[in-house]
Length: 137
View 1: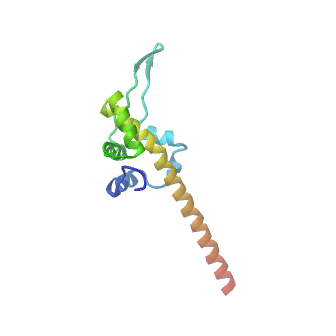
View 2: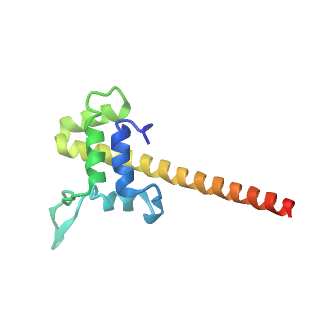
């Protein structure tokens, strides 16, 4: 997890403690972002958009993702440049949310691949143990 720009060890631990490693709870990364309340809300009445701001959320993982994005302000990475560019146009809060929405699919994909690798490894170990046990009998 710490390979993602802006996420350090305490941030990764906070996110993992809130969400877990198994990302199969959410079908896509967009569902995950919606659960974290990082997607824009759409309050529409009579074909008129009343509000499109993100809904409030008390989720610790969402807060950790926002802190990770905020820490990229002085970074020389592509995410840091993206944050600074959006900050100049949209302002700080919206820029941080936009940066989180960019880095969230990366986190989601890494977690999915790690779970798949653990399942493959577990199946391989189980098969080897079964083969060894059958040979000993």
